[in-house]
Image (tube, rainbow, N blue to C red):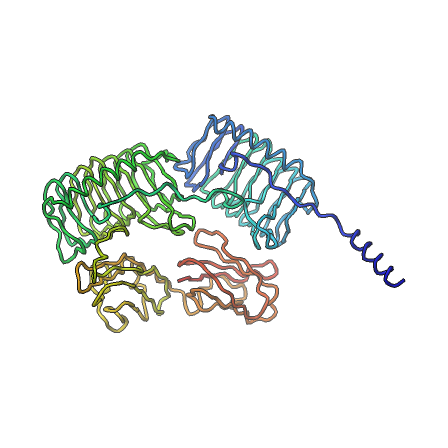
Length: 636
């Protein structure tokens, strides 16, 4: 009898649990490729917005967007298909059955699990809303808002435990407005209403309207990865053949230099003379007159040019005269139909793939501003970056350039203090350099000769604090190796705060702000020439104090201490005030304001493994929904 009672109680208990409705993601179709789209309405931009994904409208115009890392589609076949697919996705979201009915005010440090949420009227996002995937990468979150949807300034959607932005959907029956500094995640679909995205907003997802204008102002928005989205690798790389061994070359024209140019790789011309290069500064062969090697290079250069020229492009960048300006590109073949000017910084984001290839087809001349930079991020390697230029190339003073430049029927001018991690090659035109540093990317077999030095691990960029230490190291193969570390072209000498200037590891102690530089490098000599010259590595020095800079502390004292800082693979957070343990939240952001880690501090001392790229990061400590401390962390 006792067993029967227990069985009956168990059945009753199971039947009393509420039913669970698992959300299912809608089919976005071609709409998945758009970061901003309206089926019927104008799209406008003000300021510099960084957008990855297609942009367009099926009835209206897109204006003032500048260069977009995607295809602009206004009133064409692609926009018509997107409008059809968007309506299908909207109807699927609209037909879902809600399981949860939260209050109109979302966020305020609330954590929600996967499911379908319905709000009967207007809704606002405030503070932080955490979406917990509960270790399920397929967890889907759907928010059905039957009115307008707005976000307060600085509000954030945080994803934890496997939750992905590609699985978050917001169906809104009214105006969508995102206030400055919002971090929004997921696909937002406004039905018959406009979308307004203010300055400083980060959107990992999409903003789509069935009918309504979309306006953005100085935002960072990008389509999410995951959920079956393709992994971008770019086109197949070309075969460099003998051009791989040349740092500087023209098939027809003089090659001349002024000042102290340092190069790793051969230098020459196949028609004319090569003059002005000091053999002491060149780790490679200087070809003063044409020879068999230059003839082979001229032939292989034409093959290389034809390959790059005939590649079908994926994306046209519409404003070549406004290239750069912190534009972020992903692995694709890009085309620019006009003279191109690189201003400020261009980021090439490999998406975590070391084999990601970038090809930039410039149907016009190329020029850069002073101090212009190509920044390689998330696995991108200079050996996989190629520039095809129809016209002259003029890289201005102190610019930092990366990739193999193939200039067709144009002169090349590489000006004072610039650095090139790659090659500069012209099919027909004079080549001029002035006190530059150029290092060929891997591909040349010259340094595989027995005994000749070859660098197998380059010095890495590092970040350190004032009065701290910084190290650069290099690995090389060869026989009877010797090392000479330099800052630019100036040899370093062991002294009070310099150790290992002639060894494989350089250590700088008790560093100051004056030690910061972007051109630390090392020359490796061996028993067989030529020498190997490393790429430049940078040292960033921050006045960060013994445990980081505290930007804000409500009580005037630190709530949490972080050490070591700078850190490499692990970090300890100590809470001297025991009352704040088990209820304090730590959030870490990168320099672009994107959340990279979020956790609850459950003990007075929490130690955790952390894997972040070198650089400066920022943290916030929240206690009882109140900011109590923020500061800076340095990863090295």
